[in-house]
Image 1 (tube, rainbow, N blue to C red):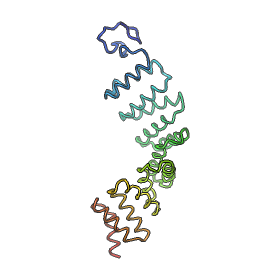
Image 2 (cartoon, rainbow, N blue to C red):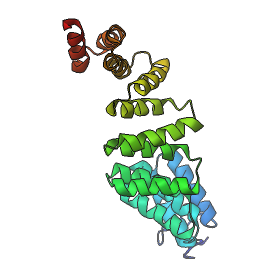
Image 3 (cartoon, rainbow, N blue to C red):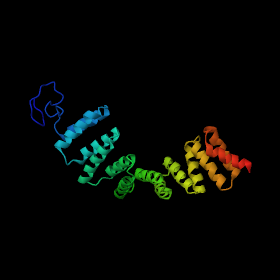
Image 4 (tube, rainbow, N blue to C red):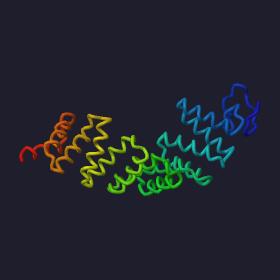
Length: 244
């Protein structure tokens, strides 16, 4: 019995070639990738990485191998290695998913400009990539640009009106800009899914107060305080209402 890669003689009970570490019984890169996938499912990530690296040695220009390796590095939190793997994919072919993962990695590493560029390229290649709209909204909101965040969330919700978490972030952006009606509208959607969201109750209450509907605002603020008694802003607004 010989190793399929280095042709060294092997004993029957060998699971890996002692010379090049190729898994015994695998015929080529496809088998190595399949074995790596099974190892991932079993939680043996180190061995899975070894198999993907071996598969790359067999077929260095196969984008699927680099993509799967990038996904595994991403799962492990090894973000620079993940970016490198996805960048290899992009040298072989343009791929929206690889740009999306690069965007996620860069966002987590606080490389914000790179994240924006990657997510925008994702949408250039695949305009229906909903999660890219979502993450661009997140990035712009964290950059202190709520107006741009609103644009992306509105585009997303126009396509996917049941993407409820987007209403939360859209409402937050609207609140920062003093867009009270939109704040109320968005957080009402949040409360449909989670009636005990203290943040939604508090921000709706504040929006009603800002538009002059004090009693209605007070009702929401009191509900917020029942859930989160330490909500200082809700407490302050209520005290102002009743002082007046």
